[in-house]
Image (cartoon, rainbow, N blue to C red; front, side, top):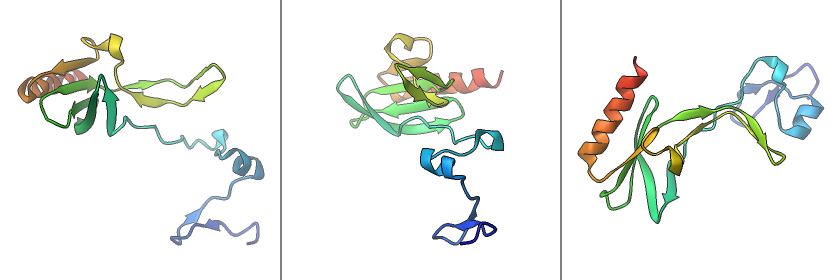
Length: 128
């Protein structure tokens, strides 16, 4: 391909060409104004012996349930700023509450009704 022709990906859509440095680093130019996509919360995770699966997500509220449907967690999804920890770079990303955040940003519920109540509270708070 000539330098004037945009790169074409297999599905036939055009894609902007990357500079050699960008290709080597696998990154786009930060000066181009395009932000990389925000890493989303997981669809499933393991916590205290439970495998939790995402069953509902709306705005900042996320509800997870275990496989048996008897244990639920409701999280207020937050966005963590980019940072570097021990030389590893972490981009801006959505995060769930850690163990120490339960009661503030997440709640463990033993019934779906209680989980729905907490879910609705998070949605109501986000509209204020």
